[in-house]
Length: 413
Image (cartoon, rainbow, N blue to C red; front, top):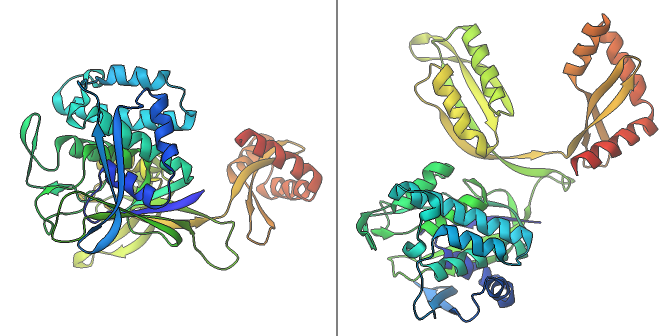
């Protein structure tokens, strides 16, 4: 697996992403093969050239449709075509995911069902080449995860099949809204479309998070050039590498999380406890508070939440429903986590789950689940001390724990 970071100072388009992958050395067969399986052999001409933009080298890509009368394919027919093709299952899933997101966004913009969306706006063959090529390329390089800088969507207007439209393009704005993709300001960039609907759909399907470059060791950089001439290099950079961290930390996992915070001074302790419980129920990994001195000398708390990025919208809804703060700060961060899994040990009163984490030196760190200890103590009318002692005795049997470890890993696989 390769950690990847996408730096996109002048926006994202499908052809720019595919060009960056070719710049990394992607074989043409990785793209042409799946397109042939979709029945598109001879329906396009793909030109890949080394070029320059404002003095910076990179790879530029052009797709020319060769169909004499290109149809305006509806999503309903295109979905059937993709499902019927003998594509690799992982590639088929990604391609369907990208087009589903795009069809849903276009359908919402135009006010009709996604199945009725015609892909004339992005060009049927162009879109297929870009989407299939980018998905096949990212799978070829085993990208997992992809972190992306917030893309600038553009400003001004763009001429489309529906006339002159404001920027960001309606489908781009809808994708960003639906998938909670942060958009960078573009006021200091020339007017025009910077991020296309196809580019945004690819990001919303593939990006695990949006934010600053994670700590990583870059091994290769692919540069994809855009076609527009700007007052600066029109490019994006796709970095491939591996997570970097402290010495002897090779087994730790780098994750992207979202951190939400609000300072509160007008809620009771009971209301704050309820808000924290509801945030946990909505998917928060951690909820904690710190004492804070607010304006006018009032005492308050700083309530913090750590969660997966995809949980952010649901958590914001909880803040608004049960909190009193008028604002919530939010940022993406990286955190290092030790590999862990759940096992269980047997006691005279029943099984207890144990969290097993693997330290960088190969040793295991064991911690019994406190809820299980409490449940046994209440049911058997024992003290926590007695139950914990029984668990410690069970953990002293390496063979029994190894058996449960293996069972737990098998269940997770």
